[in-house]
Image (cartoon, rainbow, N blue to C red; front, top):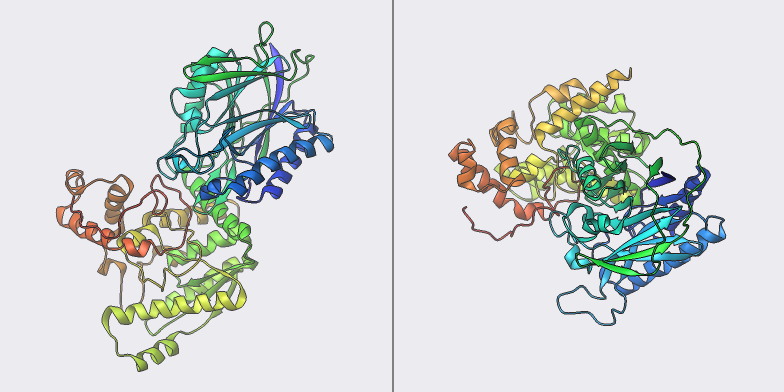
Length: 584
């Protein structure tokens, strides 16, 4: 058996920051070298960040990515890291793509991987399977590759593929067994979703057994607009057993010592062979195995529980949206209710309480406990709090225009939204919107009012999950011997927008336990009316909820981005026409 120390850099690139991302590569390559690694691997599209979306169609951006990879190879060598092979994802283009075929993206861009060694690229290869479902639009942005690169490194034949190539049957992964490789390295940009279970581990184990190889899966971490990447990089052996695993939702350099079957016989360097339409290309770095050495213990990080991972995803997404878009601080309205309380807590955990500004905006209908609950939250968390009474502003508007009913209720929400945006404009804060997925689905929000803002941390969180997360966060604080950040009254009192005397959410909406179950079936799995009724939902309620959801589509198009945590969020996952008379 031959030995290899593999380092997997689970890092957080920023889309478009080629110089900064290459700096991350150099920093972690140095750490890997200091750890005695023989190969270091970075995530999919590391150099450009991921996903680049229509930046891939900008020729100058593709050129800059290619130039950055060549410069990175030289920089690694000049900084004494040239002997360490570095696998890195980047944006390339198909060789010889002088013109673009009809129906293909402009410039024939490719989602590629390069192996850098001694100042040059040993190989470049492109992703073969291009996902075109859910949040992915890769048919729009890339053309596929058709090569499986296999590199002999210290006597071990190692194959390299990119993300979706692992998930789909056929293609490069199907050619791995034919290639004789004993290690398969997969570069990934795989976003987080709740309820995935351990799908990645199960997939990696199955592919490892199919190809009879050890498999190393490196994933990025961090927030990018609505997506959040959770890391969870791992290594399995040829039997599919877990060897090493990185933590979730944090950067890490996972170093694993592997013992693998050495390559048999001389390789056909530079030669190519065909397997199921894939060209197997072979490259040589070093033919001889390493002298035996004492392996390090392989780390296996514990996994958080379900609510813990959801909460960590929301915190990471909020932190990176603020950080990567260079906002110094955030501001939000504090009503004393559960939604604003959870949003403020996420923000304080993400940024530190000193960078969170809460504004209490009582009106004539605000209850005493709403004000006191918001004040108690400010005290418990140490965030910046201020009170601005909106009553006089509302009265000034009412003197100018005669309104009543729903228009009067919405005016209060719009005055509050205007106040927050004005303070944002004056002081430079990012406004956090506090609406949850149940409200967004049913249209129970005011356009240009409580929907105003720049980022919505709980946009993809059903109301029932809001309560669960609040209780989880308080319990976690108690477990650590700390004061629970959310006042109990904010969790237990009936939810209300407080826009008229004695108003409760249940005046306009069904009980959230019933509503969320129906919404999840309609929005999350796209069941039609008949299917919803067959699933046990009351026919009249089905009709009512479908009307609410469909009529609110125009509102959702104008809602700020927020982190995707479910299998189907509003935004990238679900794209329906605003003008729509479908009744099925």
